[in-house]
Length: 180
Image (cartoon, rainbow, N blue to C red; front, side):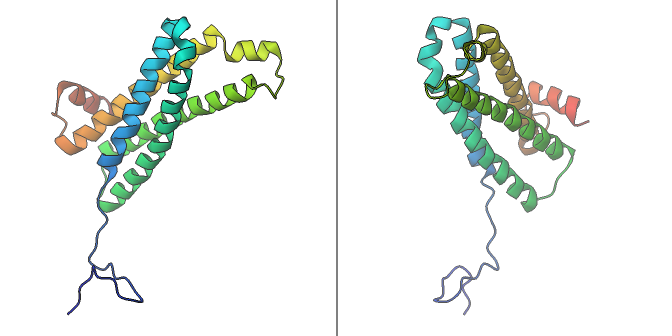
């Protein structure tokens, strides 16, 4: 008798085994990290005295969110391979990649900020002032808010595929804007 899930000594048969769709399990962690990062970014701009206390937390959330967003993109590609596609899926994928690129840019900005502000680089004072300036921080906040809007659109399009476009009023609005 043939058991496809048993391991023989010399081979492993996966003829009737299918990959599970783990994308819904993986995708929620980066969303949480990146939305909380955005909130802390705005709070640190509105309350500059708290900015230094929030800096490390923001960086951890951003780097963890971007790394896990990469995993979410990969599992999303696997999910697409498992079962077809339509316009909603294409839009969902496009907005997910835009959100990933937006937060990836912010992560690279923080890496650049860390390098420029490090003691061993001896960067010019004007460059350090620019990188850590208030107006630059405002620009970073606006980019983070833009990333959160992209995440919201991505999530609404994902929800429309799972629960239908009438899942809630916001999903319907986003679905009508980007899919129809």
